[in-house]
Length: 196
Image (cartoon, rainbow, N blue to C red):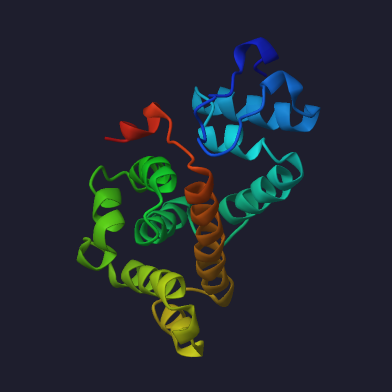
């Protein structure tokens, strides 16, 4: 694992709230951040920003990990939802950071740019178009979402659990987008070029 001396939190990770010093964080946060820095080769600024509120960092990251690692959707599908939802919400951090992850996991250098501007014009199979239609509807007009939207997902081959996960990913990143916008999270420079 990376030691404390090798991990630093970017003071500009968020502009509307302070970023704590890595050395001052609780041990469990330091371990999680160091592991991510080692895996990615840099410390994603979301970890620096969330470290401002350690008691919220823990459940936020745990829920993210459950959606990404424990759900029925593959990682490319998760990232597609994140990018489409984040584009609707004009979230700079998530469109850039998750745009990079979408390019990597979908193995497509153009897909994230298509999704962030208008998923309806992206080159997608019907299954993914319906997935994003539902996720974006839940983002833009949650009051209009009905069981028919779940049924559309089932009709194109998603299981009930996967349909739940489509909604859970969209809902979680609506929360994330709003927090990122309010705190003014800034994407790491590395994200802009990954997967291109």
